[in-house]
Image (cartoon, rainbow, N blue to C red):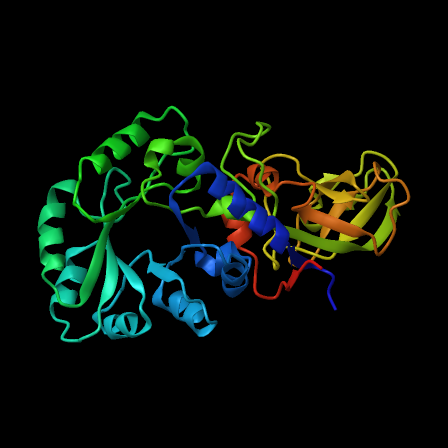
Length: 355
């Protein structure tokens, strides 16, 4: 059995949820789309028993949660993509986000006795999905008149919330606050909004990345909250060999040993979702010590410099990110963001709950 594995820490996930709870009085919609950010959709939802609601990207994800026995509100963050989904949404009590006129027209044609709640998406400045603020009164009137709609709410999304002095974020908050409809639920803040913009908390906050123990922040800056990594990506050394000065390592021979040195081979690669390209140097952990990745990452293996790890041998655990090595650091070195690493892990990589 290949040694590469993503271990999942339920205690860390619960801890991060508690950190969100300590920051806000709002209700919490835990975002679990993209297979729970790579952690496992059902596992995350079943672990977060205190979440008030869950946010997913599609009907398929919502149905998977319902089939697993999840009873909380499930919000379809992109609504429905086809009118044929509406009867299923109504039957399973899901809550769609309505962001476009074609969805409003599709709901007008519904002749079912069942009802569902819905969120109306407002484009306050992200310019991705949602109605212009000037359209909201008309949309509210249209949806309020429909027998298939129960409660309505207003929802928007912050584009630059990780920037603590962002004028664009303040503009979004101000725009959202001007839309007042008595009795409507309101939701605006994502993870960065929860941490940096208390005025954006509204009735529901929508933590995503921070639940999994990471935040978007500048490298080498302290985290504003005490989060714990939920996932640790690890494998083992499958080979340790002494190489001579000048030996070329890996595809293309892009790395040459500067001296006689031990080189380890780790049983993990881009076929598991580990990045292939790095903009700056990156290390892994072996015996608690950092070991730089050298040469090109292969599909199933990568090579590391073991000069700083005394006594390293075949079978030693190697941590690629997680406990002791923040995923944010690895993402920065790869010129990307933590989301892409966590969500990009492939299906062949086992996920196992940490005992």
